[in-house]
Every structure is written in structure tokens, then in C-alpha cells.
Length: 234
Image 1 (cartoon, helix red, strand yellow):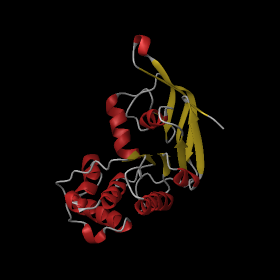
Image 2 (tube, rainbow, N blue to C red):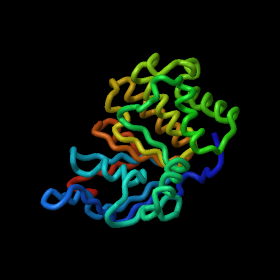
Image 3 (cartoon, helix red, strand yellow):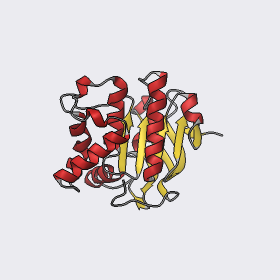
Image 4 (cartoon, helix red, strand yellow):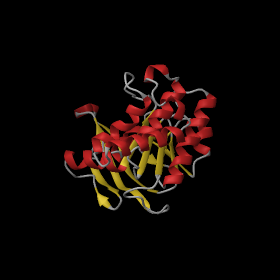
């Protein structure tokens, strides 16, 4: 599944330097991230772990360009993105970043195939036949090739999350961000989803950054970065 923008595994896909983020106002203002620096290379899987409230999800949202830092820099493929305007950030998300969340956020009234094609339609890089062919290829890769026309409501929770993985990979992003991607799944489906994320990302040379409370998942990643009180420790 090669395509435009594919970079050799091992190259730095994302780098952040001295990130700070405050949430709240006045007396309730909290310093959530306190100078976080981090880099992710293609073909590698990184786990960010730590207790609730330590800043993991805040960091992930910054790295995904869904929020802006109060200080520091974020680079994607060597391009400074932390201070760009909304249009540039939206374009970069569509082209370079795939998201997998704890809740799949599928459009349940649409088929699995249509859900996977949605990011490709928005990006507008491929024609209709090419989009459908890629969506079918991805659904095959996550073991749902026989269920391409099933509506979201006709899929199990594990199957819905596998469709979400295929959707996240639709535009061949540089970076895959996953926030508790197995949090709603049983042990068997958790292992399956993690295996799919890591196998497909390594095959396509994506950098994977996932937030997890699951120690077994974290141990299977290439690197684990523990967080405490807004900074990496250890």
C-alpha cells in the first residue's frame, strides 16, 4: 500500500520541543504540560502511559493539531506546524495524521466501505474507483473484506474499531495517533486491534503514538514514555 508521501522507515515523522499547555482561567488555571519534548520515527510504535490527569491526552491532541500549545514547537515531516493558521492545520491533519480513539466514531448509518472512504473524499487526492479500491484493500487488511457493505449498526464493537483503524489509514498518513484504542474492547479484541495497528503501521512506515492504561499493550510497543504531572519521567 505505497503511495504519495511515503518516507523511509526510521525517519523522524514528528518532533515536539518544550511544549507547554495551560487549561482553565484565573485561579483555576492549571499548567497541564510543563515543557514536553518528544520525537517519533516512522515504523516505530510509542506508548505514552501514566495516571489520569497527567497530560497524556492533552499532549496527543496537541500532536494531532487539534489544539495549540501555549509554548514550544511541533514539527511534522520537518515542517513547523504549531503556530500555523486553522486552514493549514486542518489540511495537515487530513494529509499526515490518522486518529483512532477509544470510541470508534463511525457514521453508523453508512457502510464500512463508505466510512473508510470518507477521509479520502475529504482530501480529494484519488478518484472514485481508486478510493473504493483502497478502502476495500484496507478492509481486507483488517479482516473485514467480507463485510464491506455492512452498516456500522451491523458490526460488533471489535469490528467497528477495526473499521476505524482502516479509516485512520485511508490517506496513508505519516503519523497514527491512538487514544486508548482498545479501552472499550475485551482481551481478545484488544490484542487483535493492537496487532493490526502495529502491523499495518510498520508495513506502511507510519509512526504510531498511543495513549494507553493497558500495561500489556504498553510493554509490546517499541518505546514506552511514562508521564507524571505534565512531564515525561524515567
